[in-house]
Image 1: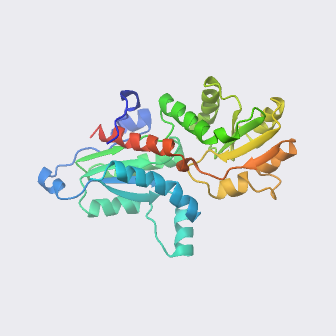
Image 2: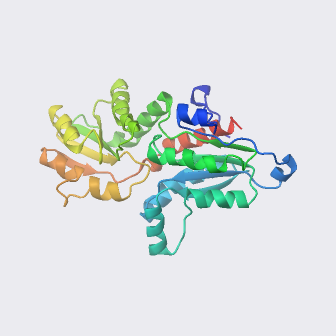
Length: 301
C-alpha cells in the first residue's frame, strides 16, 4: 500500500466550522457497532466530472480507478460522476447508467457501508469539489468513519509533482524551439488562480517553455499565443491540462476548423501547431498522486 509524506496529509471534518474554514470535509462518527461494520466491505468512491468520450473515459478515469483498486484490494472501488449532462448523454448513447454523487452515496448507505473514502479526480477545490463538500452534509451521520480526499493540485508538493509528470510525458517534443501549451478548463471560482500558480511552478523548475491557457477564464488563448510568440518559439505543442481528453480537448483545443480554437489561435500567431489529445489521467505518475491522496484520507480514519 502506498505511503505518502506528512506534508500531503489532509483531514477534513464535516463540522460547519471546518467547512467554512477550509472548504473540505470528512464524515463524522455514527453510533453503529464494529461488528456490523466489519460485515460490509469499505468503499472508495472515485468521483469525477466525467466525459462522454468513451475511449478517453476508459484510459483516464478508468486508469485512476484501476490504480486505486490495485493499491487497496480490500476496498470496494466505486464510480460517480458529477456532471448530470454527461451522465444523461452516456445513458442515451450507450444505455449504461453512471451514478451521480447522490445516487452513489444513497447506494453506499443502503448497502450498509460504514467506512468510506471519497476521492475526487478534480484538479482543484472549485465549484464541483465544493458541491461534494456541501452534499456530504446530508450523509455525515451515516458512517462510522468517512474522509474526503484532496484534489490533484492541493499542495505545493502536488503541484511540483504534476509539473514534473507533465514534463516527463512531453519530453519527446523538446527541441528548444517549441512551446508546450497546456489548456485547462478555467473557472469563475477563486481557485482559477491555480493556473497562474502552475505557471510559476513551471518557471521555478526551469521549464520556461511550458505555458498555461484556459478555455473559459485566464490566461486566455490570446495570452498564451502572445507569450509564445514573444519568447521566439516557432512551434507549439498543445495538450489538455485536464484529467480527460474529451469535448474541450478535441474541439476547443485541437479543432483546426474552428477559428476560435487554441490550435487556430496559435497558428494565426505564426506557430507550427501539433495537438496531443491525451488527458492527464493517461500519465501514470499523475494517477499515483490520486492514489497517494486516498492514502492520506485513509490516514485520518
